[in-house]
Length: 366
Image (tube, rainbow, N blue to C red; front, side, top):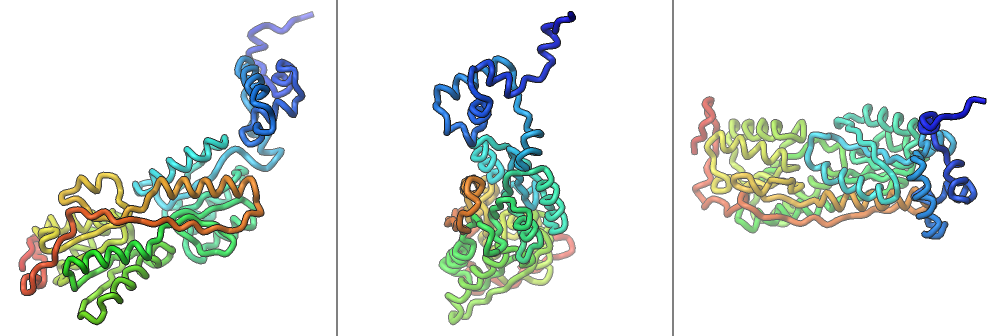
């Protein structure tokens, strides 16, 4: 009779049955002990014993077989609008840290601000039997919301709220935050203020514009002037393009509030290129308080949106939904706070805030 060599044994896949037999327990006990979501049902002493045996045998759980059997894997799907936007780095990191505590790993994908791509990503993730979804890409009236509900995948919206009655969300109080920015520049004496907004497809854009309008109402009777400029994108290049365009048209505003930090950085680049002093001639604010905004020259006044808190709270909420699908819909609203830095200052004295124009050689004249 031909025996099985030690090398053959090493090449053989160790199964949960092998672990159970070696530990002297029932297979169901071994399975529960090695599953982070069910090990609490077994005594800690038994769990440690089974884990030690599994490690000695080199046991690796067959996640594919498990997911095919239960139609649920140990993975969480996370979709963000852009992987190049530094806003999402702390959100992703805190989500990964939180779900890892319950034994899950995270698959991250970018929708590139395209609703059709978001639908495709959710379909693919559903096909991989993800246990849950966290989506930062939802627009209002987004078709992918119904796809999530139809598939039965526990889903939480983060940062952007699709405002659907059956989808839980974790967002910032953007309306109150932007209103605080408006109040800040009004207190500095600015009476001609412009706000740069992206298209109003998402809740963040609508809520921040609502905050700007609410702030404008505070001094409506004082003869203030409030303008809104629409951006095509969310990045630095677009902020630079818009500021150059405003300067070329003869910008009169003394304060510019941007939808996010990236647009604000682009505005600052254009101002410097034109030789316009910030904040002496024009004050500037952003939103999100990204890393290194304090290292700009001058450092950027911004609204801190607590990316790690957004990530943690959304992951915490998703873990609860996975364990109890019948939980009621929740809307978690976090409070932002303003970080005042060097890009905001007193408005120019009356008579000093003449119209700014931009020459072909990019030099500004007053």
